[in-house]
Image (tube, rainbow, N blue to C red; front, side, top):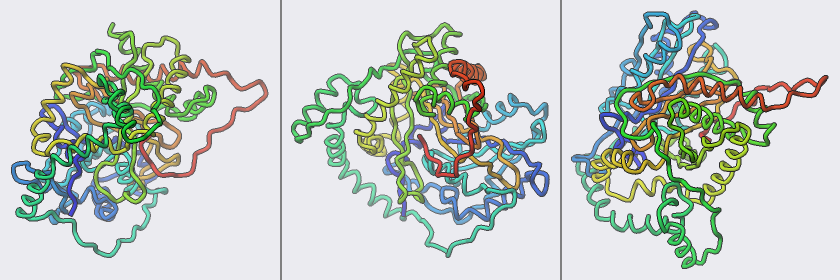
Length: 502
């Protein structure tokens, strides 16, 4: 028996007519090396059937508690037919990037059917150069960055020839309790909810000045310091920067439509810039995003005179929880220097800001997001979340956007015999997190970006992708070339490693 955590359920509660809370990815495939010379729906369905046991999130559906009195449970779908989740379409032409992005945006807008396992795949033919695309989406209540990457890895191979996967011995099915069990659990949790809330408040009080969002509340530092004093704790966290999000066109209530753009940047260039500045790859990624956002805001005469505030998801999944369906994530909230005109200074400040944010994050409880989600009864959060998100977007947006960087394997991978050329991630837009989301995935020598927007907030989303490339060129101009006669080091693919959110 597996019940959704409070954080998992929050992704369900966040859904509304204008918010679809699934995460997705767009894989660009080259079928030239496939034995069939093509990627077919039949081949993909067969692959899913062979490896479904490696992806528990694809086998489970929701079992809801009557009247929403408690969080739903996971239960295996005994009638699951993966072919009903796999769709196929052919672009009419010309099959270019803009047309593919438009088709993917339309699919991404649509909510998943909660009466079935919460995933879909769409095989898209008709791309230029004989390429094929695979768009796959899974509800965020079932996966986070790490488990999503592992789900993807279960379907991929190291060679064009698919590997043989041994089926394990049958295990007991995951089932939800009956109606009586659900109601009994709901009553017990309702009775214990006040104690649970007080417990969470007590755990969080000493960390109010280290956690994102709460650290900006009036008196947070004084309350936290007093609590630590009473508890006999003498260490003080690093000073928190101002985390008040300025007003931008990104923020405010969003609509139901989506726009999508995507593109890639050489990872070797990013690493070269990072080395020259004594920064990390992620510092450079954050700087690229800050530069692109600054350029877009300047074009629209909407650049604030202080930094934007970005939320950066962080994986806290442990090795022992690899098979657990659901989310084990936290969030860092940090300023990004969109107010600085000099690209070199932006990178310097971004590196220092991220270092400070990591130090503060290390001192904060990793489960604060889950604690916050569990402070109110499920029935209340189910009814109130969407309304609270929309109100917050109007009155005081806590952040301007979400930026996520997911490291992946630095070697080529294959799906149904076709080489994966690129993988562009897509995430969630909500009223409270803003009308634009930037996510990137490092794969086989490239940083593959996916930018999702609400056209009510950012209609020209391809401009942001263009500004990202311009920002990379700008930083490369700041890097000194190797001395004459000396050959620059060649970036070699790193060994395959576990894919995890930064």
